[in-house]
Length: 244
Image (tube, rainbow, N blue to C red; front, top):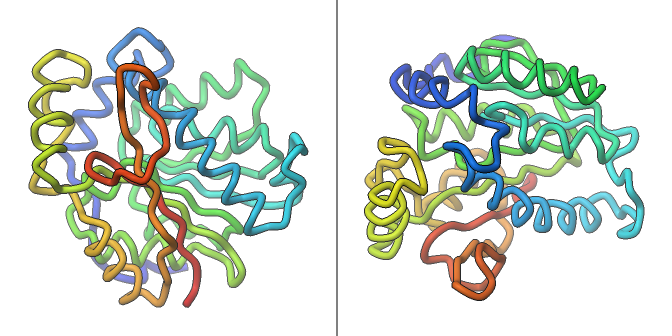
């Protein structure tokens, strides 16, 4: 399949930044420690969305059995591996070659067969998938509309798209960029506040691509709960989308 948009979405400097973190990606105390704390929260939302959309047994261990899934911007596989354990045939794509190498090694050590690919999504000749995920990625791409077009082109007719991203608010500027990077909780240079996208902007991009966005759920932080799902969208949010 050809590149549907003809537009490159990868920013080389972003790929290089995350590629430098590849060696520590699976270390829960390393530079990706925050992702390890965030991943269970994303998975809780994702599991509920999977059960609802595909009418899966909420108590079943493999709700994606017989399905194919695509994770875009997969890093070293923090989400791709749980998707595989849920029964999906998983393909995962990342802009950083170092991340793909780390992902392949970790999956092989765990006996997981995941098809990892490096490069621009629209140029990889992939087919369509029952589930497409892209977590904390859209804020890093060069052309958000082209990126969304590439994602929706990979979603099967009755498939599901799930995205998460920071919101562009005063709170996210202060906490996700200023405090988190200033205190070393997130590597410096990870976030660029002006590239964050609001729920309304994301909804409009999806609508332009023929998809309807579901109600977003906030990913919040508190001293008592840590990172958790909430109705507060001020920092970060996660959302489903499907064909309108």
